Image 1 (cartoon, helix red, strand yellow):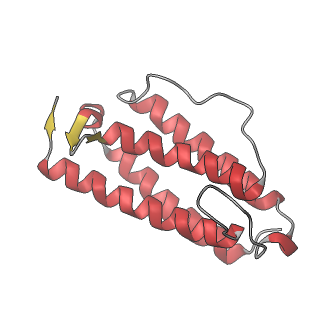
Image 2 (tube, helix red, strand yellow):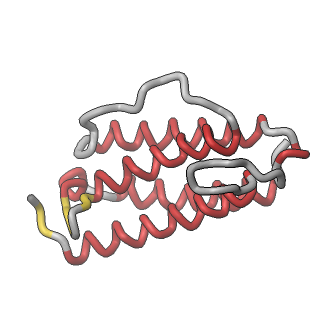
Length: 140
């Protein structure tokens, strides 16, 4: 059982990120700054959601991560949608008593509720990076 406050904060943050990606022109996905393209940031954001669902909610994905979609806006949007659905499903399945229990991960010990706070921060950072790349980058 998930705390509705945590879920609503996640949905708001992730919704804003998804809206930002939806407004991108497909040609902007290849814009690059400091070795990272917008497409790579979008992919990475979804990938990390799958990783956190596994690490902190013990919810593995049943499908492989897609390949060669970094400049394919519809495919990236689908990947984002699927990752978000997977994470929300993992969050809703976690027993309420486990939300504040420490879980060992490659990042160290973190509770599931802290992991969502980290994802909110992570998503916000990448939204800002996308804006910065749009302003300063060149296409390759």
